[in-house]
Length: 289
Image 1: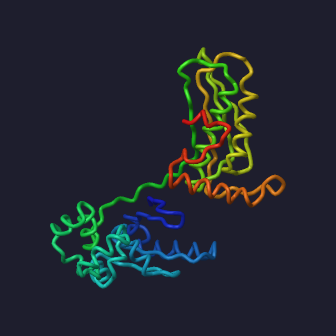
Image 2: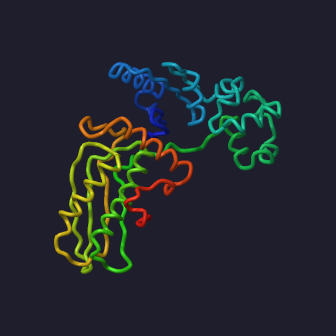
Image 3: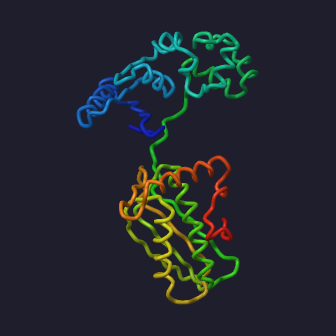
């Protein structure tokens, strides 16, 4: 089966063809039972003809239930439901449709598609199709990013170590922010340098999982200091954070205080609202990427 991660706690699984072995309904029921048995976690599931109807079935099965909607039952199942139940209908679209007197999916389904196109554009067509139980969106095979990296090639080969340390700190800060936005933490840091003669060298270090700037910057600078030993002109520098997993960084009970967590949250909030460069470390303001 192909599975797709839709959010931190929601997945789509395409089990087309399972009927020749065990049966799709039996397989889905068995999967849910196994999750309950081995984890004790409540889990709801919906089995149907496509992603939209399966998601709506899962919604109706909550909490901790399962629902099967075969092809012939799709319209009878969705018709009495509120239009809120259709994925991609947000508050604005909901209020617009309600102002048109549309409350239930059956009413929405009977609106001419040309009118939906006129009112909501191309999204109107997609919403109308979903109200008719049509969704040809494929389940995308699950893939999780395992690393983040950044490189900088100098216009002119350089030996300015102070400038490079500032640049590495800036690159680290930016990648660390991206990691926190992805809710990821890293356990391996790699630094790369390429000399003017194109010789390339890397050095890495395993660390406790983190996505804190102040921790990663120290590790990056330490690796760069150990790596850059030939005192030759450098053409390129780069960093890579690998062994990424989902999670949030833990405080070091000896070095960190809870205020640091709150500081990172405040900084990240400002960056999301005003852009990444709204808040930067003063030590490398001149090295903005």
